[in-house]
Length: 238
Image (cartoon, rainbow, N blue to C red; front, side, top):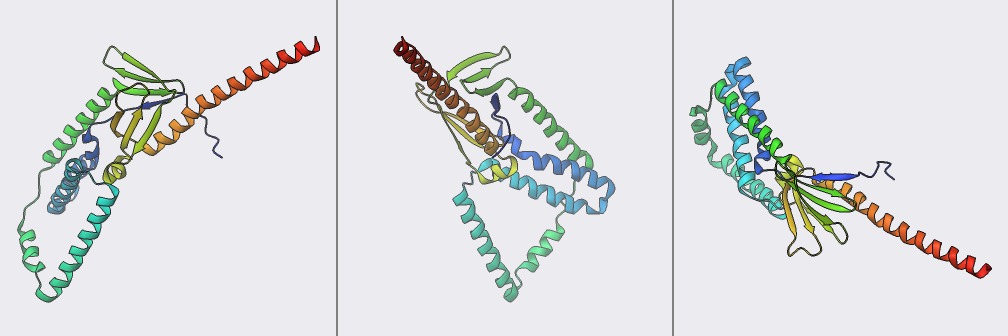
């Protein structure tokens, strides 16, 4: 059994989808450094940066559930295998290779550093804004804090149903992100929080935290029953 203590509270924050572009931000900085120290690789660095950017844009534009992702990988693998077999007979890759070699995909170090700096500032802004809009889960209350003035909305955790979903495989691989669905008794519809980071850890900690409420209620009930039994015993003795 785990000896980790049960947390007193859990903070749940949602993030903009830009959070998933961190590989592009890091690669932009590395490409800028590469143009300084290994300028002969500038074309390869440019191609790598564009491929990474294309992948990140694909993650932002489309959702990839587990079944869809598996089908996509199988389809791509089948197409690549088919192209390799066709190339062995007709050398169809040769014109494509010659065309790719004529491309000039290089960029200056200032271009890469500007992208890295711009995205870094955006990440700082996102981090700042998420400090003023978040959910706080305790064993007894679910609290929504919003705004610079700290507006508060409170809900009881009695009957609270908290579920997590991995909506997109790539979002989970990039940041452990998923969706939190909170069904609050008395609320007309469930509260849905997208782009919550480290979703697996959040679910594990929330289960431990909410189990504390169950233990407290059970213990309190048992204490009341014991007190009643002791009172009854004293009356019998009298």
